[in-house]
Length: 180
Image (cartoon, rainbow, N blue to C red; front, side):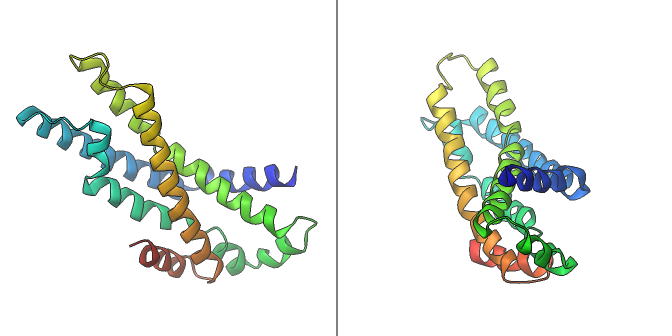
């Protein structure tokens, strides 16, 4: 019960603030730009590699991953410490594990929502490709599993960085350095 309440509180902070929408807009812009570049490359020459795998090796994927996760996680614990609500949160009848898992879970849910527009890009390619089996469910699922697991790694680094400092900017910089 307390876990869900804390997770809803954190998710609300992402979707109420302008920062959350800026992160999503920047990620969608980079995904779309990457998609256009991949499609232009595929017009010039065909490749036996799936488009989903090609997306992993572009610099845009890593740029999205490396820049979005520090911004997503920078406020998790640092803002609580800076505003003075950390002590109040830790003295409530909620376990430390529930607080950490709720903050991590909210960051992961926001991270996965940020990657949902990639499905639209894959759907466009599937719709206009000549081969109906171009994108199988297993390929798309494994792509999202890889994105989820890499995101979990970088978000955990960001949570750690946010927990050791009071400044959100410092937390973002530490997270960026740890992730690079």
